[in-house]
Length: 187
Image 1 (cartoon, rainbow, N blue to C red):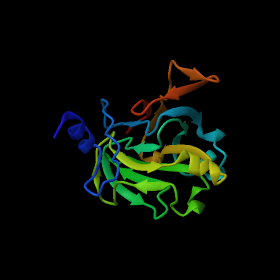
Image 2 (image 1 turned 90 degrees about the horizontal axis):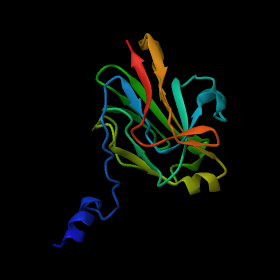
Image 3 (image 1 turned 180 degrees about the vertical axis):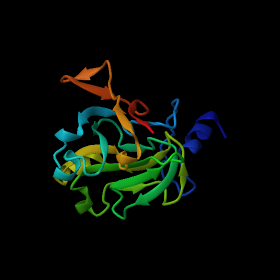
Image 4 (image 1 turned 120 degrees about the vertical axis):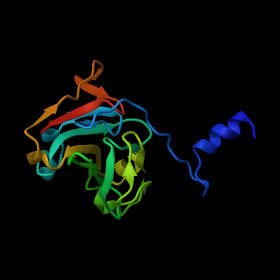
């Protein structure tokens, strides 16, 4: 087996499907990190009444750029998945509950364009790939591709600081990359 074959085998599962590599970044247990790379938007700007009103929790929206891989924004246990694979929840050992929702109205896609890589109750590490999704399929279906990442139990904390920022701007909005800090929760 040559070097290319060794590298290739690291990204291909036994069933022959491509597996995204893990993202590596320094983490803290009180911080939620960007699960995708893209343009950061405030939740109030997300084109969904439930998300923009903060009813799912406190956080950000990210307009994804790149390959459509959703990475774990925290270390914890997968608490909930959906059959349509458009959202996923993670509970941390410290009691933080993080919900990631891909797209607006994407539940209506019935799982097409989404592939979940983890199951309920799996232990995950920040930076581990959770699912893949097709930004093109979401757009072709007529839906917004924004990824909402929120702390869904903000009342469990005395303060949640929104720290998502970047020195790189696109149209006056910060660009974030996978692993950039978004939220810091204080007990």
